[in-house]
Image (cartoon, rainbow, N blue to C red; front, side, top):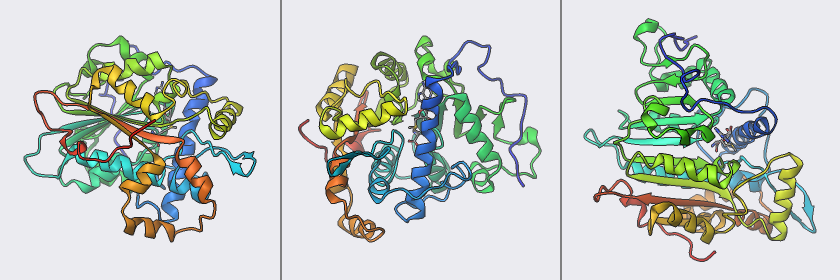
Length: 380
Ligand SMILES: C[S@@+](CC[C@H](N)C(=O)[O-])C[C@H]1O[C@@H](n2cnc3c(N)ncnc32)[C@H](O)[C@@H]1O
């Protein structure tokens, strides 16, 4: 089986004082474990035909595959509880159909159609966990016109690199050829097995809370280029940081301009469904630290304005995105996959998750031009 060369030549962050993972046992372990929810839900959605993702199996821990409820496959969710007739599904990590396809659309428009002379772009995925997006993108674009960085705690980056080492389909996408001597391979893995570097894809073991102590992203994260149009993605990640820490991560990202930001987060914690969602999470010792501060679509948009995005911000909850961004043909296809008899429940659930996106073009660079025509939701 092909393996990734384990070269000692890659210097890791440890001991060099930059953006390294200094995570703490206990609370951090619970947060790190939320990636498992995300990967299991992704695999469930793939196995049932919601998503076409040939990399989901390889990146889901063996033996953890479970079939999720239909409303979770279509939308997203967490542990089930009964409030009168309604169940608050509250899984902090589930990225499935609506969220995945919506973020895919934003990412595709940011990258633009592939062309040999495309200006390179950069994507930084915060708390990427076992996400498969980079593999899907690399397999679609003949010659990558982007560089993709994934950041997460070392325990999760190590697990991901281990999965890559044992999955030929992932290695093929990265251009790893087992017949090529290690020293000539374009893919380098750190001695500890927690960092990976290649021309188009980097995995960094880093605690996001340490990033803001470094002004220079290129020094904090090897391979980050500060002159490329850059998109930060947080799929249910910044919500685990305190509001101040989360803001510092975005401000840190500003040093690479122009900057775009996509957030996928729960909202509306103060109605009956939201309260149960919060208490379900608390039972798992999970606290979504920014949830009450950014509790509505309007609060999410204000968050972007406060962070200097001005008018370049928009948001929609999952119910809106399903209605407006998914074609009728695709809705019919998805509707035929599973019986969904909990329509009210689905809508309730879908109103409690949102995607917010913001962009800051500079000097008329049009990296985010494709976002400006997308329909966003008005109101709170
Ligand atoms: C709910 S999972 C989402 C994973 C992935 N973004 C997805 O949607 O499939 C949250 C991820 O954020 C990571 N995370 C949370 N806080 C972090 C921090 N301070 N530093 C690095 N990673 C963090 C967790 O380890 C976990 O992998």
